[in-house]
Length: 181
Image 1 (cartoon, rainbow, N blue to C red):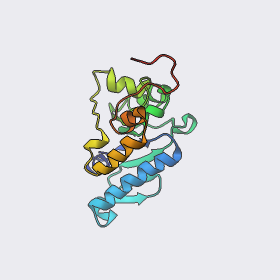
Image 2: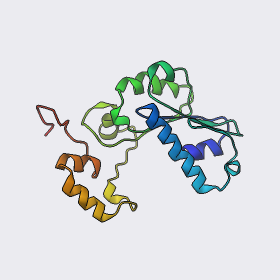
Image 3: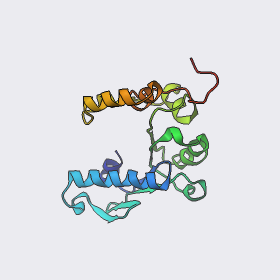
């Protein structure tokens, strides 16, 4: 989605945010690999500049990968924000920092994550907010994961781990005294 937006529309400001600088750069690396998958030469995509954390297109659009550090992420205005592993990020990042970046652009806010505990901003948007579109996919549905691998995980993981990591089900926190059930 980010690549499509950058290449098809002029002057788009697109942010990739993940849990840490390493994860944000990994997010960008996956995006750059996707570009390489579709075109042989990056020039064919209309790219002007490519670094570990930023891609700039000749049409004035750009994508930048940032860690969720409040002191350094503030100040952007964005047309789209893509957040990876959103369940592990503090609610304040979404409500006080990222969401206001989209206020003047009526921009697109895409959040994705492993289903984790039954609390927090990501959980609320997936399970309780009717104004957001929400999709859940289990690893079993992935054509890239072999059935034998799924069965090995089923044997090796606890039931809670398997439900969360493979079936994409939100789980109770492991150390919670009162379970959600």
